[in-house]
Amino acid sequence: MGESMTANILVVEDEHPIQELLAFNIAQCGYCAIKAYDTIEAWAHIKQALPDLILLDWMLPSGNGVELTRQLRADQRTRNIPIIMLTARTDERDKILGLESGADDYITKPFSPRELMARIRSVLRRRAPQMSDEAVSAGGLELSPAMHRVSANGATVDLGPTEFRLLHFFMTHPERVYSRSQLLDQVWGDHVFVEERTVDVHIRRLRQALESSTTDKLIQTVRGSGYRFSCA
Image (cartoon, rainbow, N blue to C red; front, top):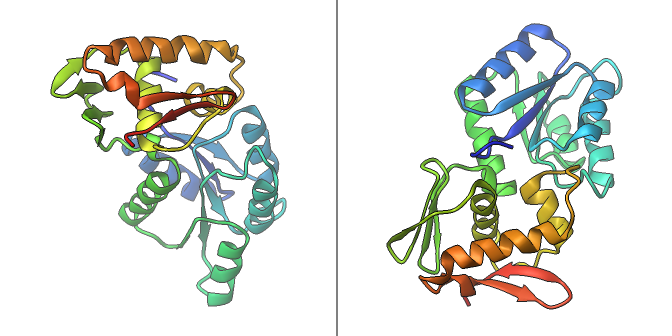
């Protein structure tokens, strides 16, 4: 992952022109498009690294989107990936089936690229707020992903890229305790083989950077469990 967080969007669509159009629109919005033509190819990508969102066509050559959604939701590792179903079907029953299988949203073809992008942004904001480039503020801290800037009680804080991502994740997921392995998955990326104590090193650096403004106390150690960002 580079300096800023770019959401990786897996596009599972067997119709080449539609897939190209989707990939183009996704890239225009600053996201990264990964293409798969069927469920087998989709699984290969997912096994390699978790995407941040899946755009999934209902009708695919090797099993349909609903089946894939059910499999993803049944697996511990993949169950939280946001999924938007794409379909030419306008039948109400199919929409319900798609959502019941675990899709987060649903869009029928033909769709306008603008509508699709609005849906993608809204699902990412809901399911993966650290992927949004909206500014966040809490407890005297303000963080702007787009500007890659952090201030504490009005003073600029200088953070390295990993500390920045760590703080962004904490600020978008406040009051919840995360274990070291969960933080590794969320901040460093799934399938990244990094020692768990690396998390402690970066937490220490982050706290040191926040110390002068006393906002370091927002990052709490929960004994035996991990870490939590809390303004309470």
